[in-house]
Length: 103
Image 1 (spheres, helix red, strand yellow):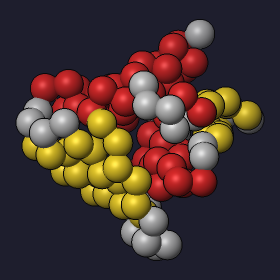
Image 2 (spheres, rainbow, N blue to C red):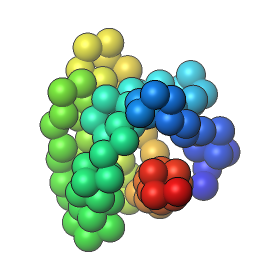
Image 3 (cartoon, rainbow, N blue to C red):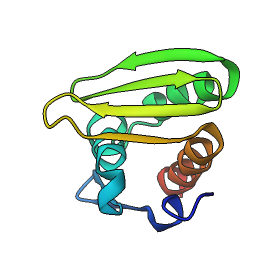
Image 4 (cartoon, rainbow, N blue to C red):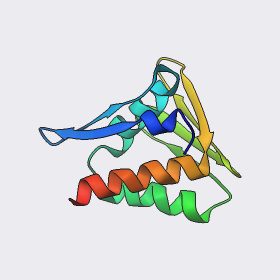
């Protein structure tokens, strides 16, 4: 994982996902909290597309995800922040979340 994504931490408090991220990854934290939350089904759907599609777009309630080859861009619809990371980094974070949610 890249240096920035090694500082992403997931916790579940009162059945709500909370994500701690560096400031430059704020849109990523919002994406996980608002679009995935504690839903293994949603996490699995996104993980499936990240693993198997070359390009893909996801439009959620708060964020958009754009997959283009090896690059994933997450845009926050309301505050305009944007985070770009590698497909491998997002896959690793989704795996970390799966482990937390299935413990």
